[in-house]
Image (cartoon, rainbow, N blue to C red; front, top):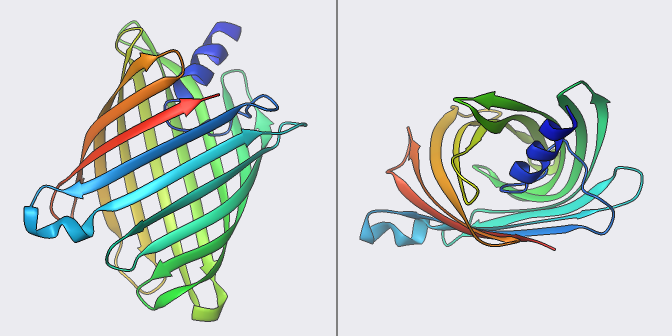
Amino acid sequence: MIYLVLVFLALASAAQAGPWPRPPGEQFLSFSVETPIAENAVSQSFVSAFYERGLRHDWTIGIDAGADALGYEKSFVFLRRPVWSGARSKLAFEIGLGRQTTKTGTGSALRPALTWGRSLEAFDRSGWMQLDASIAHLPTLQSSVLKMETTVGLTISTKVTAMLQATVEAEKTGQAVAKVTPSVAYKIHDNLHVLGGAIFSDDTRAKLKFGVWTKF
């Protein structure tokens, strides 16, 4: 069981720690770019940054931010802590405060979230599954954004990890938007990874995704 937990922690660092707390002082930083394949849609490219730092007593503090050239933006500071632990799984509660853009404008937002994760084995390989659910409340705009995301990752080799992510997002008065993101991460150094993938959505053209992250 200890081995599976360690594997999960190592793999979860490929994106973020999820419900598993980072050791005090450990930091994680990632940058990613999502860009449309069509040349005339470069303005729709989305750039994001994600940061986490482990604190004492199983707390994790972080920043989740992103923006595009069309005016969409999000920026949250959050705190997360596990609230339940099982043999191979863990559940954490997160609270974030920041700003987010909706169809009615951009305003201050409060974003509570739940994150569940567990280690798994498939095809004689180790991996993990993570479920995230959040709702951003924008009281001044009388709006809210619900987001649900499932991520499954599997180690292909000591340097390669394959991931599949499915996301559904909906505003209070809008239609839900779904997207699927298959990707592959490659370890180029002890604590440095690069990622490449594609995003398929039911409301926009396909996009390419590129990213890099490090743990220190």
